[in-house]
Length: 146
Length: 102
Ligand SMILES: Nc1ncnc2c1ncn2[C@@H]1O[C@H](COP(=O)(O)OP(=O)(O)O)[C@@H](O)[C@H]1O
Ligand SMILES: [Mg+2]
Image (cartoon, rainbow over all chains, first blue to last red; front, side):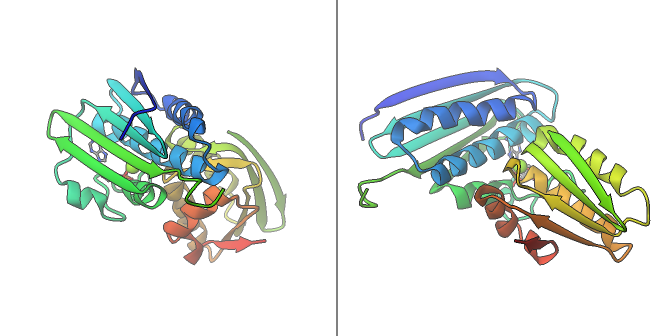
């Protein structure tokens, strides 16, 4: 499939950049003419993945988060990458309510939210090397008869 | 996040204005706990009319306050929930413990 547009941003793993990241990806995604609901879905999923890079990947100790996105004719593909500690068990991490930070601070619902708001969530992770989360969503207005 | 509170009898009505994510979660939690410090407060109603965004970081903030109130036999409710926030509340099962008033 032909790539129509592509962008990449890199920023420090600071919590104030969670809003920055979802706004940047949201603004880029508008080129596909998504509905407001689709745009909210994308922003929410990006927020989850970026928060995970900051709190789990780098354990709030800083580092760089790289967010990139590719636009196709009727699809957006977003990658959130950190070079942090990595995920020990990816299958377990995807389970609803699974969290390695118990207590009320984390709910363990991040991946569940990403999965229900996007069409596909692909996770690649290696211990001490880092994590890549790839989020895909089809924005196909022709198929919806618009 | 801008937070405003009105109190009436044993209930407090709190307006959250802004975005509830990991960045703002601690501030929201601390402020809500402050409003609930008086043990005569039994019910918490959160007005989400101007809550533009919430992700899963908000779930713990809500469950934590629910637990505080449950110990006093109090209740929690939300009003004016937008579609994005509603989706998070639904997926996480929060409506099983927090009432949605329309
Ligand atoms: N980027 C990451 N680096 C390391 N661990 C991660 C990363 N993202 C997720 N995890 C692991 O997966 C678990 C589940 O993530 P999630 O569903 O978002 O729940 P939560 O963030 O509330 O813990 C986390 O508790 C953490 O152990
Ligand atoms: Mg998470």
